[in-house]
Image (cartoon, rainbow, N blue to C red):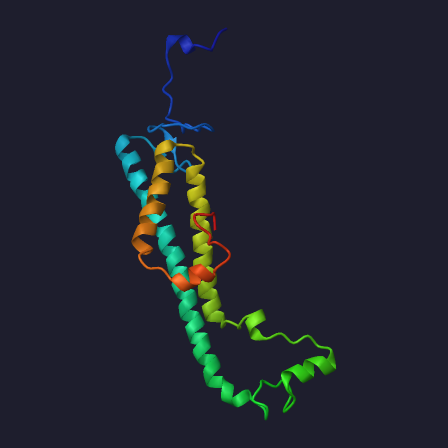
Length: 194
């Protein structure tokens, strides 16, 4: 008994995602990252393209927002340090860990390693640290999500990611801190995953 042909009747097949590990230009039955984002029509593909461009723009906005947030927090910490300086000075005018001993003498005589806050950093309050972590987490999530869109190997979706990042960089990169760029040896992150 042959059940392979089902008596000459073709069974209707439900549309399935076309997953390709090669460069492709599929439009219909393309799935973006997960099965729920299954593109069935050219109109849906158009709106998906627009959504991915918007995600690229959002990613660039978040990168700029993250830098501005850090700048704002740094300014508030700097103001807090300048207000508290008068209270913690000893006779020599230097910060003292115990009463009137100066920092260098204390470190040399005790053998303890005393690092200036310029080497270790300034403690950030928990609320600011939480906000920085949340923005960083959202940025990392979005960067990996865009990487997964890129990994569909769909030429149109790849173009949407690149166009969104380019547009976002153009919109939100209208100013430049020349001194910070000239003094920065890290070279910046660019469109790295995070």
